[in-house]
Image (cartoon, rainbow, N blue to C red; front, top):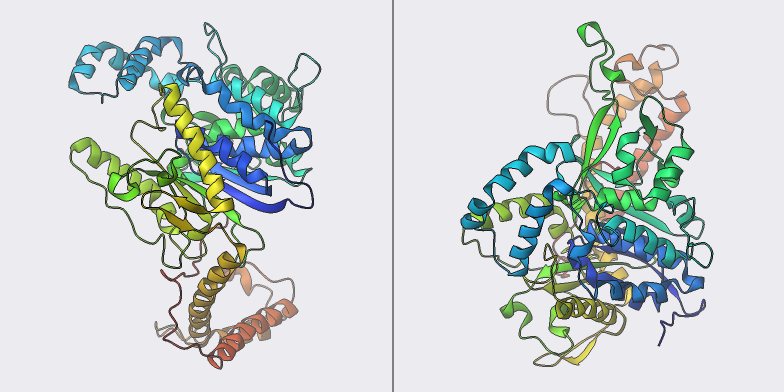
Length: 557
């Protein structure tokens, strides 16, 4: 039986964010298809494996009228014969990669004997990694492979799901699916990568200014995408401009987000370094194109649940999180896997943190890495107004992650868990589990109520800080740092007659009227704080926790 999506009248709107997890992404297709029966996806985001799933969700929504979700529902059929075939290494790493896959298949960690037995291969690989951009696999199809590599498989599947293959033979389109093409049907796609060279996350699509070496195009991009990039911007001195913004191909952005360290090569984009001096001995330093290594988006934010957030939401932004299974947390497996699915519903649910054992050196090093890269996502998903819209899927150690050789029964189990996660959001859980429990489905009114209370607390604190900072003088004793109203009055009086007034301050306003309006805006905020003081809330009211706060941070991520 095919997938039946709701009619135009029945379909509501939602956003969706999915967590990274390498092969754990098998969970997502059935979850996306399940949600599509009630919701139309407006904004979709993710990192790493979550970025792959987000791209497929966007493609299916784009092709909704041409059975896009029915096609997506069949995508997991390609995994029936395994996943390892899509991970195709460079020739120099082939033997070492095969040995690693055998070790994974036996569910054994890489112990000292493995390193001793393969010492020469490992030594050679370590020396070669910089030449292959620190990765064993390029992502595209190897010359000796009998089937497509991950990126080529994904490129064709995305266009198929979107309904963009041409002719009876299913030719790939000359113009690849882009972020702008998705927008023509009201779909916003947002992915995350990590610019290792600049030590920062990068939202995708990228902005203007990056270039690719033409010699990297063959191993980095599928042929039709490579040809389109070359045609869109003729190469100059061995470089070609990276299509940016709405013109960026979705498949290139996905490749930049899924670059799991060492498993896949980083994506090398080039740009000038404007932080360098350009005079004296450094003359021309800014004109040199320097490499930016883009790696896995999960290094920056593996679960970017802050994407598409609104102070008071008009539609839900669902999150699908992949968590660790524990027998004393999830309990014994039931036939349908309901014990692995959790979505906070009661007011106090979803606040606690699990305590993870650290027994050895490798577990300690792993805990260091995971804490450093995931703490912000972990804290954010427990906030009121967030946690009740996130469904958690608990996976065992032999499921997902770097388990590239999972048997069919494990793959099928993960696919089914994805289906359960959508059912949990849409229908709740009734009578499943041991002992049986009853949990309601997601309700937007509940989500909005809790977010309203959380935002109220955050605004209360913010307005108090605004009033204090605006009216109180700085404690430095500097006579020029009195209360802000006096400072603004002084600027307003002097601006007409002192054109150099803003030479030190910077950001000169176009007119005195703008300064006057700036002061009035701040006075309105202070007045709002005074109005809030006239409307106190009973301190015994048990409002949501943990408390939210408004922080001044970059809007770039």
